Image (cartoon, rainbow, N blue to C red; front, top):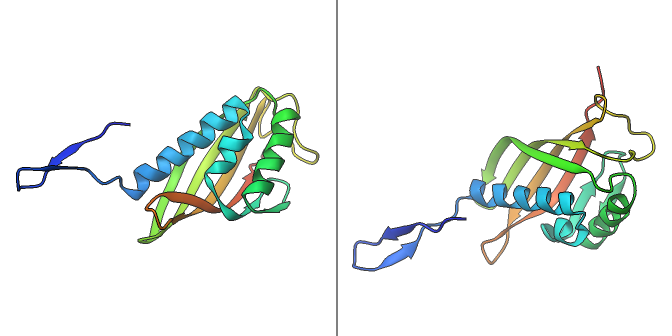
Length: 154
């Protein structure tokens, strides 16, 4: 991340503010890196303590701890050693403190998939993941809700 110094007009300087989109892009990059490392703690850290998470099977997980526990299971099981690529498809700021994010997420190199899930194409799982991010009191952003939907083959 590059820090840009902006003149204030009074002889001093201040750090340029990070836009909500830049903050969200950083969260998505962290999610991608954490997945690729099989790091469920870092993956879950980007969610609020009371996050609502619906996985590709439609299972509901409440809270950061549940998100972490579920990802620890899948990182040790069917998607162990897999690689994910997260592409921002749509960014919609709905208020000063709330953003809707749509992503396309592509997983490859998996050893298997969760029960009931089929490949989107040979060797590839594509999902569409929608998040709600909320600005925190300290000015940071966290994922308050997420729903992942598998893109089934045509």
